[in-house]
Amino acid sequence: MTNGVLPEKVMQKNRLLGVFEGGTARVIFNLTSGSFMVGFLKLLGASDTVCGYILAIPILAATIQFLAPIVLEQLAFRKRIIMIGSELHRLLLFSLIIIPFIPFSSTAKLITAAVVYLISNLAVSFVSPAVSNMYVSFVDTKNRGKYFGTRESYILVFATVMNLVMGRVLDLFREAGNERGGFVSVYVVILVMTAVNLWSYLGMKEVPLQHHPEKMRIKEVFTLPFKSPLFLRFFVLSVLWSFGFMISSSFYGVYQVNELALSYTTINVFGMVSNVVYFGAAFLWGRIADKKGWAFTTSLSFLFIGITSLIWFFIVKGPMLYPLMGLAMVTAGLAWSGINISMFNLQYDFMPEEKRTVYIGFNATISGLLGYGSSMIGAVLVGKLSHMQGELFGVSFGIKQVLFLTSGIFVLVCAAYVKLFMKQKPSAV
Image 1 (cartoon, helix red, strand yellow):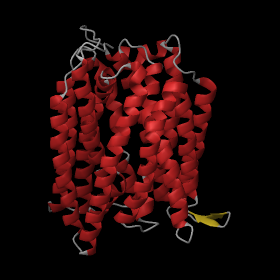
Image 2 (cartoon, helix red, strand yellow):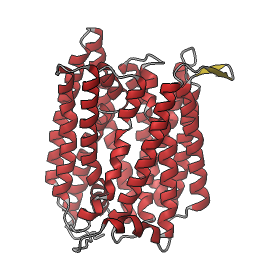
Image 3 (cartoon, helix red, strand yellow):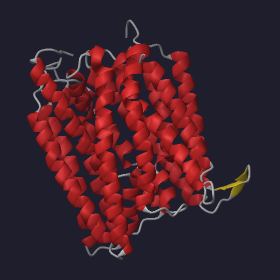
Image 4 (tube, one colour):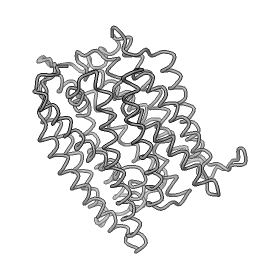
């Protein structure tokens, strides 16, 4: 990947606009996932199982990335296609607000929402490898940890404020008996964020990337990665992570809205606790990575994520609800501030620079298929065992908590895997 082709002043502007782009993208993501998406789907009449199916769609959509290298590897400049995919994704998400007003049955509305959600995520997933490569090209390797850590912190502050504000707006509308009107307000914000996101992309200047004029074949996408033993180490980790985390990830928001009966304001206040920790830790993760490497921060981040999932097993209504949620949010903030930048950067230490989008696309496709399969297993279990009740250490639990426990164990295995099998910055890939 070629760095330094553009003047440093231009590169600084690119990095600044990258913060604006990331901040608006994160707000849009937050408002169309988690408890916000659960509330929207419940408004359309979705059951817990249907929520699980739809909330897992982004991981399914990631499978399209195997096609990305066939187009992207031929291009030295990729911003135009990035903008098309990114803004199509955000405009389609905005269009979801039309669905509650269409005189369809609840089933028809949910099917429409699922199709729109799938197409939007297919669009953004297709260009995701190009987005990653473009951002990496804006930063020298030695400063990558510092930049991405700082960028995550600024993105987090903005997204946290927007979450709190929109959560309170939704609660006020719901208390007034007009939850649909509350979601109209949410989606107006999504439209504004989409406009700012487009402005950010338009202001960036591209660094020309290594490319291959000859057209790649689909077969090469699925065979080339197996020729790099060190890449396969990262691939195994990605598969374990996707399968283990996705079996429960769709149900954290559902669990808070249904079993714990928390308001959007309460959910987002606890989210703010996580984000404050995230903000403080993000600066540190980047600096730690620059000193100890991305393998070290990835393993430590997985450890915190595993602990967080285990804590969620014990979160039930009662006097310990808020203390345990607070603890889970602290560990989650530590975990996600590390993993978001660690996994992103660790992959580049285990991928050849040549035809890099091939490796990114292959990894996303296989991990996405397994992750979505894992989500479907979780959704089926929630549907079949929704009335299951048990008790452990005096804490009653249902199927969703069992899934949280399962995820925790899987993620702890990921932490051990990194520690045992992955070395930082291998000399040859």
